[in-house]
Length: 210
Picture 1 (cartoon, rainbow, N blue to C red):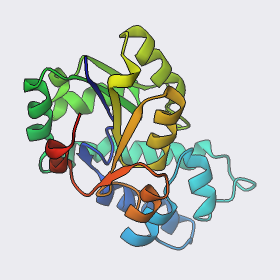
Picture 2 (cartoon, rainbow, N blue to C red):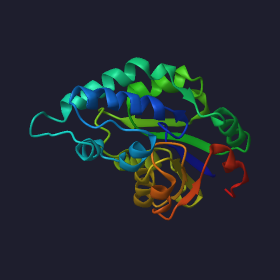
Picture 3 (tube, rainbow, N blue to C red):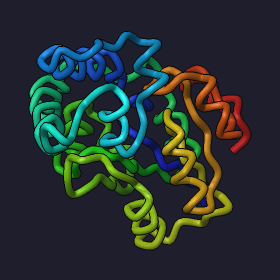
Picture 4 (cartoon, helix red, strand yellow):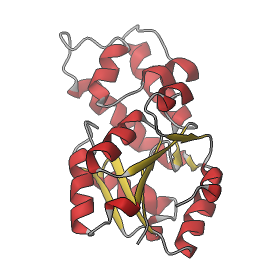
């Protein structure tokens, strides 16, 4: 059976502006250069510790756990105000009607992932939801392996749909196909550099051959 494994942040949830505002709060506190849409989408990456170093955090002066905790406290406090991407529910319904298995694989902490999916009234679209056991957003590869194993997913009939080059890396490690959406956390150019199929918005998935 065909399977779609969805990324959450930036792919289904439109939290780009909120993430930029939140990281800028941390940068301003440390007198570091603030990010705009363009600069953010050119530097955001996984693991996020590397991304933090790229934008100026000095972990010889403070442990990574300090800004990581600051960010997640701000993020978790207001993520409920972020909306889904415009056609998210429409496209989830489209694949549900086609009988496609749907899952979420996210770098968000498990309990927060479940909470935000339920808050946006889409939890029931998914057969399984896989987040991380911490808020350091290191990698989704191991959780992806668990997902494939636990749900007996057929790799040759599966796709990861995400918005970062890490989603492509995860797909490569899992041995499944990947489609990337450029209205999330990384620029279209960076996504195209992976060699994956890149679309500009979720609605374009309707015309893709699955």
